[in-house]
Each structure stands twice: as structure tokens, then as C-alpha cells.
Amino acid sequence: MSDLDEISIRGIPKNSKLMLLGDWYRKPGNNWRVVCYFYSKHLGYFRKSLPVDMLPTLILGTQFPKTASKNEIKGWTGTFKLPDQSKWQKLNYSDLPLSLQRAVEFSEEFDNGFIYRMEEGNRVYWLPLTELCRMLFFHSAEITRAAVYHGNTWQLGKSTHDNWIGEVRLSSDIPVRYLNSLQFRKFFTWLFFVPEVEHSFGSIFSRLNHSKLDIDGAERWTFDFSPPNLNNCEISYSGFTNKKLEKDHIFIREIRSISGVTSPDLETVYFSHPDDDILVPTQEKDTVSNDREKQSRNRNIDLKEFHPDLNPDFRRKRFLFKIGSYGLNFDVEPDLRKSPRHIRSLPTDTPEQEEIEEQPSEELASLNEVSESGKIPRADIDNLDSPDLIDAPEKLTFYKAMLKRLENDFGWDIDTQFGDVPRIRCRSLHLIDGRPRQYCHAIIKRDETTTIQLLEIQLAPKESLSTLIFRADDERLTCLKILEELMSTYQGEGLNAMKWKRKFNSTNTDVCAYLSHPDSKIKCEDEALASWTARAAAKITYL
Image (cartoon, rainbow, N blue to C red; front, side, top):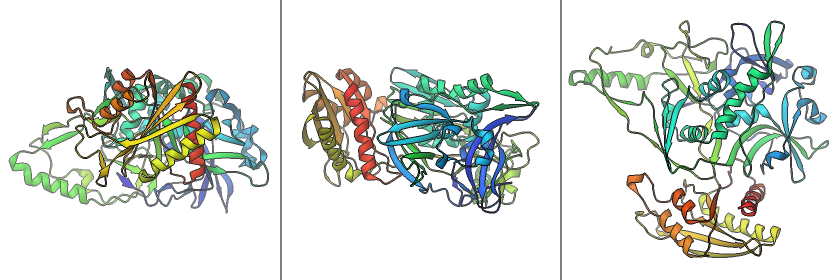
């Protein structure tokens, strides 16, 4: 995995900013392309078509060449809880307030594009369907092609599950480095094991083939898809508003993270890839193999430009690059593990140096599908990043502030009790900085007949654990049992301490749910607290 310090797209003038994505089109015998609308000081607004393979790189507001992989905050930023999806209004770009419209001289070409209008509090959010889908699914060129040209996950891999254990066998068509990325393993778990997510993924292909139009000998399509259930999720975003006109209307050009995404009911998922090999060379080949590995590691790769029109050579080594940083955060994290690697012997006739390793440094690559006539290196994108949650030392304080707001806003009686987590076959995980790890057990009197319980655990830096919300017949014993299971390790079942034991929690409570913590890719504590409180209230109300 490499970070790109600077990346450009051939044919896009320097210092051009991507403003909008328009319709897709395809000429006979060619692949789908998306019309992009850029702005530069010298040219004003102009359009350029690019292959849909490049959708993972096409983030509204990006100025090319992109000078860093760090996802820096741009424009108007914030966090909000997504309203119930039944309240989302699916409108067209032509319905946007005038102060939020861009590239007006081309408006006839994209006015029929779809955009969601959402009301939350006293604000109105406008979210393009293309951006929502980019954040959910368009994380790499290979995944994008599977959605657009196949409409299923078969090109990506196959999955099976037995009770609370899942297995994913990734396809040889995709980079083996996907296997090494925890965030890709998380994404594939969500995609393969949540049926409505897989249906949403397939809806892109279905809508495309159902509603495309034949115009002047070419096919044209306005992007559309069916989102999965995102109720009780929150998003961090950046965009723009007009401070004088429609100041309460915000156009979201970039979703930076989605928190509270429902994960499948699995404890552990094992991942494998057919090319995840350990090569064991013969004795006489040890020196040759070591030299080759050293040369491969030292090879200078300096990719700076993606070519939108050329296909790469299938014989070339594939490079995986990170050009963005986005979080897709579950409400509760399964244990995602790599299966044991395959042990294979290195063939005795292996050449000392492959042709690719003798190539000079490269500056040009392609995200398109490989072909026999391709000449340049092939590349793919990784936009996924690990959750950037609120700082662990602040979490209990933030949690208490959330409980206080719930008490004030909803009039619920809330009793809290603090204690030390038990030491149950967990080595030193019951300690943080040498002191006992704390838990906070909250009992909420929701109404005359219903009591809801919340269990929050103190975290160390880099740890992540959702808040457990549940109903039980008692107000203490079940909580203590859950704490014991939380701190227990079951090696034979692949279950670690400081992981919720989901099967146990489901069996020993009347009903339970998980509340993910706020993401702090955008630092706005009051908005994060308000959104977290709203998500907690929704789960408590309907549990």
C-alpha cells in the first residue's frame, strides 16, 4: 500500500476542481463513462468524460492534481443523524435552491440527476445519490466494476456462514492486498452477510439496465440505486452553504464517514485469498529468492498520474494506492480474521528476475480493466480507513454528557453505577495504565412498564467497543454476566476479551442493540454529542 503525495488525471488541466458528476454514457463496443463538470480560473466551467472505473477518485470539491492522501477538511463541515429513510425526498438537481447550484450553463445536461433532500432539526441537507453510493460501495476500481458490469458479488468472492461463524473466500480477480486490509475485510463482511446491502449493491446494475436510454446511437443513463437501511446512522460531511441566502440549506459534496452501520449477526469471520501464499524455496534457490525479494522491495515506484483511457497490462504487477481516508463504522465489530496462508514450494525454474522488476520507475498507471494489449502498470484504490472515534480517555466523560442530555431532553429517570470490570481470563485487559478498567451501567426508566439498560466500558487508546443497550428482567445480574463474558477469552471459538459476545448477549437478554461511538474526523463536539444523543434516543425508544 502506498500513499500518493500527488496524483493527477491525464487530460484534466492543473488546478481544476471537480464540481459535479453528470449522466453516464456508452458508445457501441465501449465501456461506461461518466460526464464530470470541472471548474478552473482560466477555463471557467468545463466538462470531461472519465471511465466509471475512476469513480473512487471522483470526490466533489477535489482539486487536481490532488496533493496529499490525507483527507483534509474543506468547506462547511458537520455531523448529523440521518433521518428515517421514509422521510428522505428523492428530487432532481433542478430542485436545488439557486444559491447552491453550480455549472448553471450546463444545467440542461444534469438537471435530471437525483439528489436526496433531508431535514434534520432546522437544517435541510442535499445529498447526491452518486456521493452516497461512492461512500457505501465505490471503494476501489474492482468493486466498482463488479457493481456496474456484473451486479453481484461473485467477481469479488464467495461467502458461507454456520451459526455465528462466517467465511469469505476472496476471488483471485481482486488484489490479495485487500485481504491484509482490516477495513476491506469489514466492508466485505457487510456486503456479503447483510442481504439488503447485497441487494443495494446489485440495484446499480439493475437500474442501469432498466432505465438506460438510446440517444444518437449511444446509451445514456442517469445514476440511480436503492440505498440499504441506514436508519440510526450518522454521517460526517463537508460541503457548502450560502451564508446570506438559504443559510440553513447545505449541499453535501463529500461524506467523510458513516457511523452506526448495522453489522451481520456473526461473532467471527475468516478470510482467505487463493494467492495468499508463503513461498518456500528449495535450498539451492535460497540466495536467488532472497535477491529477488530484495530487488522487488527496493524498486522505485513513483506513480503520479492516472491515464483515463488506456487499459493496463495484465502481466504487470498491481499497485494499490490510498488517495482518501473514509470511515465505514459498524455499530458492533465482529472479529475479522485471516485464514492460515497457503504454503507452496517455489518452482525450481523460477527466473531470477521478472521483466516487471527490471522496468524503470513508472509515472503513469491505469485504473481500467486489464487487457492483452495493455502496456502501462495497473493500479487500484483504497479509500477505506479505520474509524477515527472520540479519544478513548474522553469517552466516559462524553458518555455521561450524553446521558445527561437524554435525561433533560426526554424526561427519563436515569440511574448510573460505576465499577471495575472483572478479571476473567483476559490477561491484563482489565487494566488501563495499571489501574482497573471502569464500566458505567445506566438504568433508564423509559415509561411506566419499560426499563432500558446501557453498558459502557472505558477504553484504552486505539480500542473500539460500542455501547450495549438491552432489556432484561433484572437490573443487575444480567449486566454482571455480560461483563464476565466481555472479559473472557475462548481461543477455540476465536473469541477475544474486550469483544462483545453477541450470541451470549442475544440469548441472555430480552432484546439488545449496539450504539457506535461518534466519529471525530470532523471536530465539532456539540454536533457530535447531539447526533450521538439522537441515535441513542432512537434505539432506546424502539427497543
